[in-house]
Amino acid sequence: MSTLRFPVRVQAGARRTAVGGQRDSRYGPAVIVAVTARAVEGKANEAVRRAIAAEFGVRPAAVRLVAGERSKDKLVEVDPAPPASSKRLDELRTEAV
Image 1 (cartoon, one colour):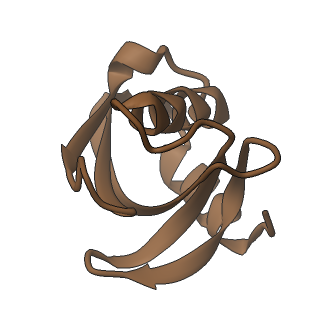
Image 2: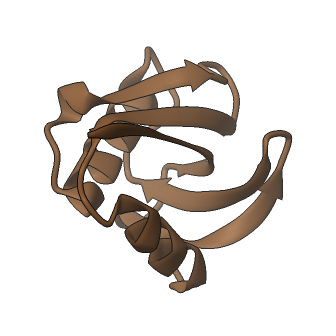
């Protein structure tokens, strides 16, 4: 299995948790991740890890924040990446949140 690394744009304090859509970020075209958790004491970061893990069918421990811990723009890594993860990433970029 390989590693999948991609940028995300976080919307903390959303009405519901959702993953989908695309927006420009400092790391390139990013997947939008909306989470209900507020950006306080790492709660939004943990919610982002869990939301991405659910979308890719992996454990939250397999999702790591590589950069942007204190920013809306983050770089995340899924390791190990499940089969067809690149295809799933493309699907998420075209889905609306």
